[in-house]
Length: 104
Image 1 (cartoon, one colour):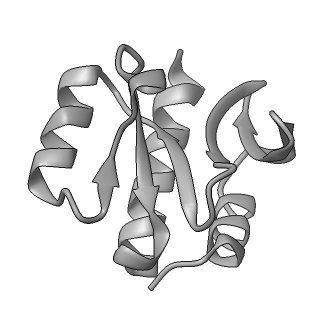
Image 2: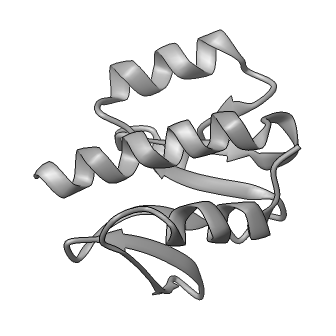
């Protein structure tokens, strides 16, 4: 079960990452680009993905852990229920998102 503290610990340990507020919650940036942020809903993380299609595949693979809302419908990000994933998966997801945003 991952927590907001795990997000902070893992994200801050990744190369080039800084934390600053984003929409009133902690956001994580690489090269000035947001790649993840704590959502205003409890225990939910907003995480950048490569594409809407990739996001949809992730949701289909584990709908209890990953979801979206109408607000994010056309955006390449996924909402993650932190208690539904472990810290190893969280670390992989954060690193993938950071790498995607660092390249662009």
